[in-house]
Structures are given as structure tokens and as C-alpha cells.
Image (cartoon, rainbow, N blue to C red; front, side, top):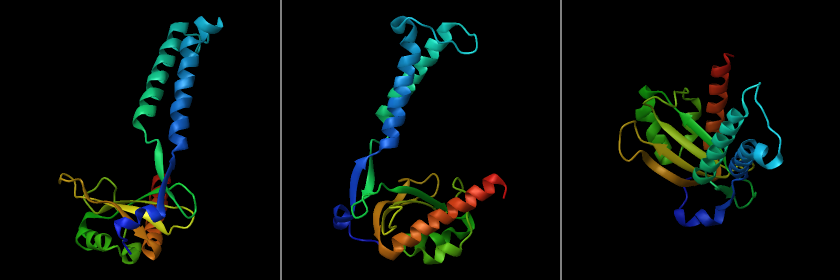
Length: 188
């Protein structure tokens, strides 16, 4: 069931996105260490007998990437209020020829019939959805339905709150699509 937007705060909170923050700060600190270890600590770090200036350049690049990551990556993520867990990211895509049947099912919030549909390409023209959900209870999540490529706006549905059985089914659908994509990528 797709729930009323007024219920969002009852089910979804926010928390620090620790992996993004630590990645950014780690890259930034690593870059500072490489760039300034020679002048400040009075020893040079070399990379495979390259001149120390190469190490300093790598350090400056790492600092710049760490700073950009700190500025542009999300610092907060949604969390389930009941479980106090950060949301997992899910994604599902269907073949283009099934778009006329899959898109209305996603819009209606009835994913049960989609569990038997074949997995399509995430980069194709078919129905493509993202579902961020609580990995613990799977009872709450937010659904976004992407429009067909080239159409404006790019999202037909954006961060619609989904609760209960429908949320569990969307979570299972996304996990199924992830398993199929992983199996296809490893050649199994």
C-alpha cells in the first residue's frame, strides 16, 4: 500500500551517512599525508622509485577528490524509525516490451505480479524503479519510478512512501533483480 505523505515522519527519520563521510575524510587525510609528509615530517614517501614530486601530486589529487566527495556526497540518509537502521538501496528494471504492463503495476503499488517478470537492463527503455528500504524489517521504504529515457521530468514518481506488504514485495523484487544481475555479471 502506498501511504499518505503525512505519515512519512512517523516511519522515516534521518541519520549520518557514515560510509560517505568516512570515505571522504579518509581520502582527504590520506592526501594530506602524502602531500605534506616530506616537508612537515622530514621524510619522503616514494611510489616505485618515482621522484617524490609524483607522491605529492598523488596526494594533492587525493585531497581534491576527498574534498569533492565531502561536498557532493550525501551526508544524511533515511532510516527506519522503528528499527533504527539506515535504508538499503534497491533497484529493478524490466524489459522494454513489458513497459505497458509493468509501469501501471508500479504506479498502483502492487509489485506482487512483478516478481515473475523477467529482469531487464537498467540502461534500457523499459520500466526502471528505485526502492530504498529498511533492510531489517522491510516494512517501510520510498519508491521512485523513472520516466522513459528522454522524457521530462525524469521521475514519474519521486520518493513515495510505501508501507507494509507492498514495501516487503518491492524490497524482495529489488533483491531478486540484484541477484539476477550479479549472476549474469559473474557468468553463473
